[in-house]
Image (cartoon, rainbow, N blue to C red):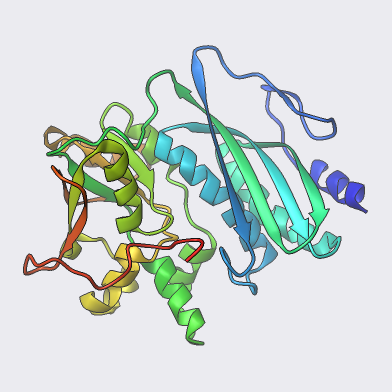
Length: 314
């Protein structure tokens, strides 16, 4: 039955000219373009931890790939290939078909070829590894932030966390916010547009304060964030600011890009992102000397209204 599922997957995947050998052998054979570095990332999503157990198979498939593509976006890389490891309680062809509907719909948007993986019996869990290309020395990294840099974020923050909070409370979440939880948008075009402009970058997966903290730690700097500057979608803006701040600052699952850039790039940043993919962007703070991330309320006082972000083993 396992091989039936693998055959089912292989029959639906697209390929690329740089895939010498794809699904069906002990390993894939791939041909990176000359002069490019290979960016590789992998994430595991477990039922009840990274997605609600009632999530549809198509949405699980989409999100499993999206969160990995988001890592490539944060590096400024162009996606190329991926592998998939799928653990299922039983060999469920209907689940696999639905999963592939979402997974392959997103992979087609970015020309990503599924080139291998594994299926096994166990608790519902999905592990995806993605591979992409970036010009040598051009990758965006976490360790390049400099004191005096502006801190920026793409899109809006807090929708996914608000949707999850509504579900946890047994309430009906706004449809647009629920879509942000189930089907995040990897900011591939934005990441590539930031090459040569941004000093450092990270995707917001575990929460803005936590993820920006990783940049600060890697770069040996601190950061100051203005809560009033955090971008909110029209749906989230209906909530009073103190209510939405914990979702925006610590909720996670946004998969937006948080990056730093020199003050001299204040005009170049929105211009580059508008040209790349009409991606909205907001300047939300600054990199400082020192350590850690401080969030300030509109009165300029330090805010301690939430944990910094999601922790897998908390």
